[in-house]
Image (tube, rainbow over all chains, first blue to last red; front, side, top):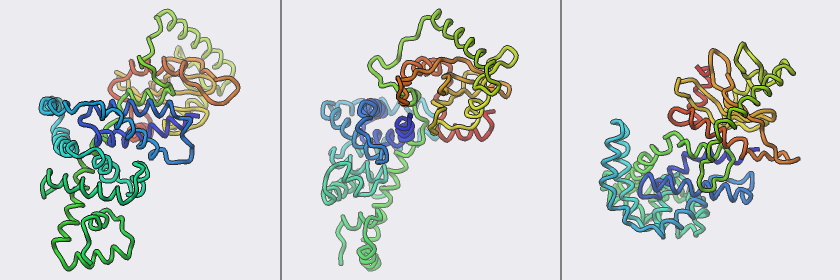
Length: 163
Length: 225
């Protein structure tokens, strides 16, 4: 009866992680989740039971992200230091450590061109196989690998050798 | 063979076929710089996995849990307006009559009266005790949470009645019930109008976020104490 919602609910933690890997900050990530879930609920008739819902949802979320990222200015960057400060004020010691680590990585991700960022998010953050990631992005394997190589080189350069 | 960066990366990610992987291993054995490169790819992967992994470990925010549990496609504004008090009072009164009627009708019905309390019994009691929100079936658990007294509460939907039950002195006390809404003759359940007010009530009763799947399982295994 509600297998669709149940399955989608089970994917929420992974989808929030993917959204965070694509987005500049936590608020944008949750907005992206909200938009993606609304879209999925509206398009539920298009989902075929028995097929992979995670791939379907990654594709929906990626499309939502492209729609909003294009219209969004990069002004968000200006707010980063203040926001990071607020987060540190609110959280416990372990969370601070985790968030600061995330902040550095997220900032490095944000400097990647969109097409490299989405490839890195699917393979390195979500742990998908190259083939699955290429299918979701609708690009040939060779294109995916070259975007991954370039994205990784840029990340290594930003985050340092000790990665 | 001197592997290029794409091949080294694919090797680090476990994406190469066995034969190519063997060749890369031979090249790595002969050149420490290549080994360093593979190590760097793996370290980056670990670092990204750890940094974003914290997000996936957080509990599902209440608004997403409610959105996906209530089977309602949100149209702005997403939260349904609260019904007026007297309508609510009438709904509660009606549900008590329903509960008493059901309780008297069947000894093993889903609801019965214990002292001055309306409690879950029979199959509903069993489902509240054992069934996780991830399970599907005629009886479903929509969301589990703790109220401000720390008691576990669960929003449930059955063919006969929908409601919120909270654990109190070893019983599931029904805090709120509503008649379920069925969409015509099909078995497809349009839970919108019955469940949206319930989910709103649950939001009001809830302290913190709803239980995620792991926390719900732990609470069940501990007997909801």
